[in-house]
Length: 297
Image (cartoon, rainbow, N blue to C red; front, side, top):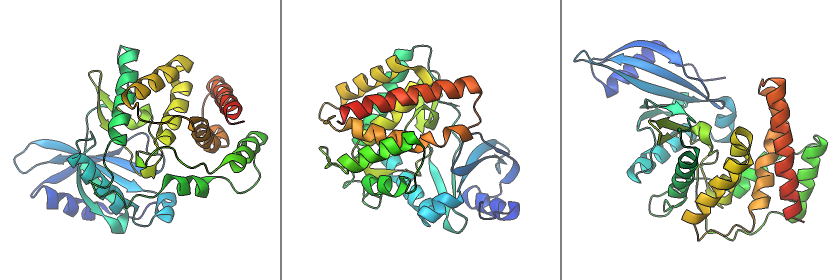
């Protein structure tokens, strides 16, 4: 469920940014599992047309953080100043948990014709995120990743695979981090990147941003790449990231891999995948978990 935002109110809001403009049409953009993302086509006062994006947070995000829209807007403004490629934020309406932002012309998760370059760019941009100075850019308002992980782990008995992971996490964690806290995207994977002409031009969907061990982002992206492109792609991405971020201690990567693997186990069946794809993803997820469990013995 989303707070109501009537067209008349939206038009007035747009005109505060572009005086004497007119909203021509709106359409829903694909993706946006936890938020509603709507494209807006606008005729400007001089007759030219432009596009904007309205991003509105859903009930789950608002329950987790009633100020999530304001926090994300603040984060995007700071990231823009820090020269991280993100859509420029124009304004925020906390009362409807909405952000108006730049429309970026690109394709989501689009790999270039050169897979090696695609994986290098993914790793390089994740490293750029992790090198943003939290203190310098005033990002201390972001939550700690460790607390978020503890709050999102299932409290009730689940599948045997969920129980296997949860028992191991309870036995070994929470582990003291070997890395200083870094800015985390929180859900970094190809689907949250936009590409044009073989270049990564924007990183989107920052509602899960946090501060904590950078291995949390690495583990999440490793699993997503394993699903989408296979083991070789996962390994190549990790190699590129490690070559850029040589200062990062990878000792606890298996722990964060288990954290990344736990939420999807019960959700895969709700993703409306064809049977063959679901079977492949479950098989690869089990391989991912088995490897992490062996490494954490």
